[in-house]
Image (cartoon, rainbow, N blue to C red; front, side, top):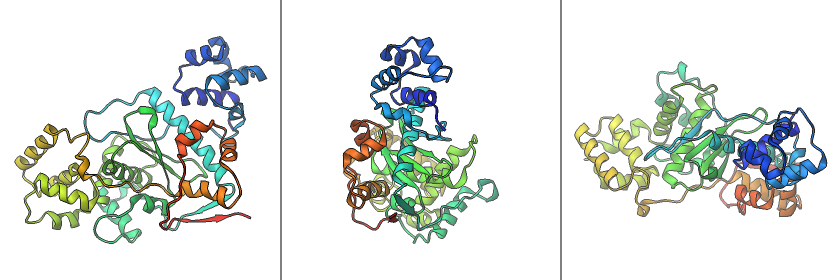
Length: 360
């Protein structure tokens, strides 16, 4: 159960403040602020108001009783281009956001039950011949037909994964996975990234959920291999590339069909030895010289499959339980600006969604 000190540190991290900065904004000596964070002293009403104002949060934020969790096992950085280091401050801010989202999810699910229609398997990577075999098992388990996966977001939601979007406070992060006891797993992806990267990121995070319970030195590479094999099954891609010269034009046409990046397709062709080393080297040089490592041509973009579970849960509170938006914001214990940053206008899309039940 969270203490005031836990929540004070969480609020500070949410805003990206150092302890010194937060103390100054609160009008409190840093020595006192440190004692408050560490639970050595209890705040009075004025101190609670001051720190709430400094962190731009309602004072009710400090009444949250949920456990505060540490950072996620994996923070998936940008896949292409020059990789930027994710700082400790970035991780603190993302972890704080995830904790706030977990609290919201618990509150929202008190009145709405989320029933997955597929099972999320857990497969120990050490017990299988290859990561590619695990990806094939999951496709078979979920009865995915051959060819491109049409809507990966919906597929994961049907398996009980809550997918959300974030800007990650400007950090060069593509996605994160967070699993807490008694809650559905949460996967957040960077809403500012193109759909080809988002789909690969979702598949990467799915790989973590299926294969990894504890961090290892190889987990990121394994999640990348899973994502590639899950989205581009090797046996099918051999047939796709067979007898065809791999060119930028071919990769562009396949991108529209398979809904992954040209670079992911080229890596698949390389791993299957469907392109010579010289051809691959030339294509990578062409991709780099055109600036496509970080952003492939906009003319090849396709829409990202937006999450539906969270918008449906929020809309159910309004349409079926009679809440208005101001009440949802009130029970979320953040300001309206934070609420809309997290959830947008939470429109509900019409395609089939995982089943939800309202508790009477």
